[in-house]
Image (cartoon, rainbow, N blue to C red; front, side, top):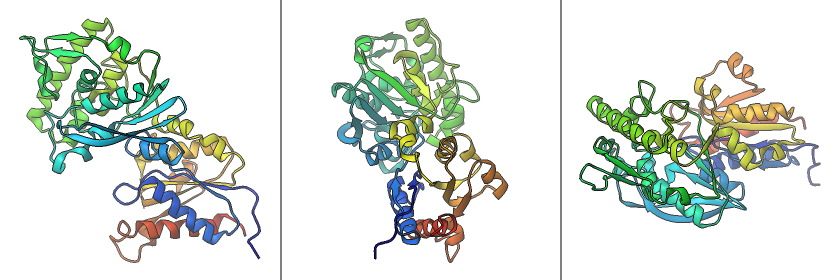
Length: 380
């Protein structure tokens, strides 16, 4: 006999497990474990992201169409990227074009890496006739204040001799004039929403260079050069627009791409996971559910400050649905994860037979975690 259906479905909505599982695979494996332990249970897979890397994959898994695009990578070499489109909305993930993973051979270029490819992806989205672009920031290889992005959309950045500036944050120290050119028409009729979870300003000790530059290979002297370039850029953008947004929270996101979006593209900023959950239709998916399972590579203190699992837990709580978590590593104490709204939490490291094998066996262990959670939380 077929298994008796249970009332109420389960939503499996994890983020990626960085270095081992993409969000869609994590969702599939956890769901498989739940189905094995609780036959007859309807399980809906809805991988999520917080606006950084994995945003495109989450949109595609939710039914958006993939649109390929060859764009300029962070060091000027072409890269194969993509954006996602559904109805009137396009999803652009910065890391697709100029992320750290796009650096040739993984070699950082802190002074010369640029954001031109992101502008090309935005232009591609506009050409498709969409009315809204969701731009996911995170994982950027550059610290150019979004200068390259703007150049891709027609802005001219010139030095004292009238020559166009080359890519990279270091070149901004030589910026003498900004010609906005056709920028006013580049996004006419298109709303830009930035998915961003950081509140850093563009400049200063909490700015784009100081906080994130070292992750992109910048050392002490490089950081000084980048800060000078960003300061010069912010000064001239303020002159050109009559608005100074360098201190706005989020201006320092993605090496200053947040600044360019706010200052010159009329962007609005929303917390990444909140925006993505809306985009993916999470509220509809969770309606009538009896359990939500979320997760990520490491459930830690950062999770509690805007990361995807915390956002999923908050949204599920508003719907009155219990939430459990699967994590590669669990660094929160039980009182901490319970206070964050989780009914249960399982770490892959605790399921592994030997230390250090949880990443290599992540898919298998995620399935086992789903099975264990279902056995504990879903009555037969």
